[in-house]
Length: 475
Image 1 (spheres, rainbow, N blue to C red):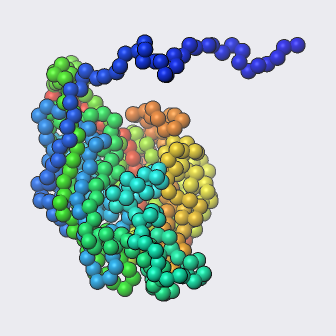
Image 2: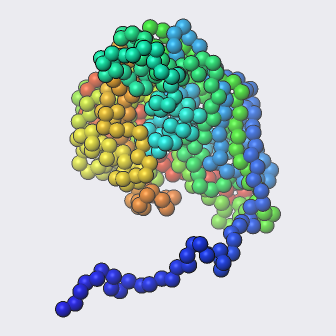
Image 3: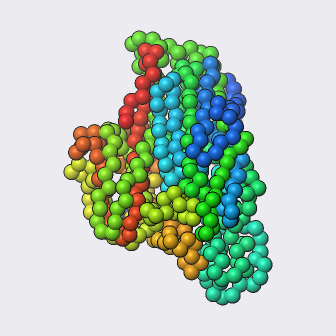
């Protein structure tokens, strides 16, 4: 009789305890990178901007590498209006963001504010949202961002109806619980002028690129922001529609890294000499499409992108009457609308193979979009917020405890290879849409009400610097 110990045949490895590892291992350093410095750029269009305006930066350096992950834009935002008003959650001011290298369009993201909120709500760490995210304009789901205690003791009915994000903005149950709301506090801060700093990686996948960008070889990097309209960017109490905002003290900061002269010579040779492989930098590029309004029942939402590397998609829909409505948070409120069916199709392939028929199955797809069924950073949505549907006509109805906190987002990840934890992903993966039924992705959804869908398609593109010529490969 033998015993199965569970350890038979496993090799034994000698491990040096970490406490004494330094006794026989050398210290680590990089001889290829000489120094790092942070540079502040002033926009060519001036340090102030108003709704509908354009803010443009030109980044250039003759000898350095650009660390895109470090890039931020900072400013002071101020709001005005006849009633209490503030900016919608997140970077609601940024309608569109474009980046060009040496005249080549690298990315062009419309609805950048909605995309940023979709990504954050779906995949951010809640502790980041409530700490560092508060400096980027996120306030909606942070109870600490309040003005203080209420001026009176609310009744039981008032407490039950109290919206943790917006308090009693409708003023239908008295002022006792108004002052405790994050919305009211946000309105006070932006009315006085609130300083913010936003990592560009929140707005565009190019700024999440893993590699440094050789600015000295690629030429000027032009970054342009188109500001959203006031009605779209602001959120104002029902009864007033004159909210507006302005940005001042606008600057962009980014780190540049100085390479060793030998590395610099090598990169120059590889990029400019014939017969060399060149420098190739993969990055994620998003295309965001806002479709025509759809009504109750089953509808098909069609978006096009002729790419061989479609990595993932995100889908939301919003009440059509709430789009560009100052009394509705149209940049951050994504209603559920009683969805009973959701499925994407690329050519003859269906994703998933059977439609998601419940909110829980839709949420499961969203979690898998960012890695696995269990993620370290699962986003902010929970069972209540994911299935909330707010009415536009009533504004912030205090009888709906979680009114305007809707967070229904569906996603799908098309990668063939996924590693646990979402690390070590492949640069070239995903599904090809190029030869599939006119390069179209069709989303079938069954829901109730008149809504306007927004779909974001993320694909891999490449910066290719070869034989002294820069090309953007991929669509």
